[in-house]
Image (cartoon, rainbow, N blue to C red; front, side, top):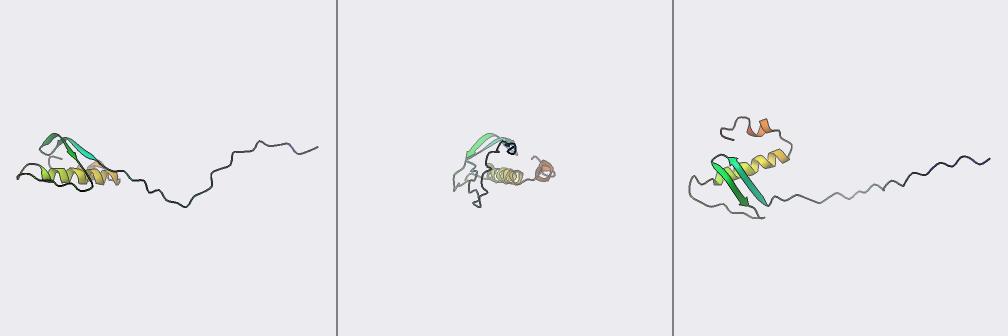
Length: 87
């Protein structure tokens, strides 16, 4: 008597050595309420220049972008905003 036939499992995909080169790109930064900025959207390009008078929020935009980058890198909210006044 022949051995019982076992159903064959689908072939597993072969492991690959290529690494993914897909990256995410931030194209805009919407600030609902950050520092003194309320309801502002800053469009971002590969090179973005921020200009404006003193107190217009240039540094706040940079701080918001840095916070976003830290959160995307795995930092927790308390690490990013824990001691920041107004953040």
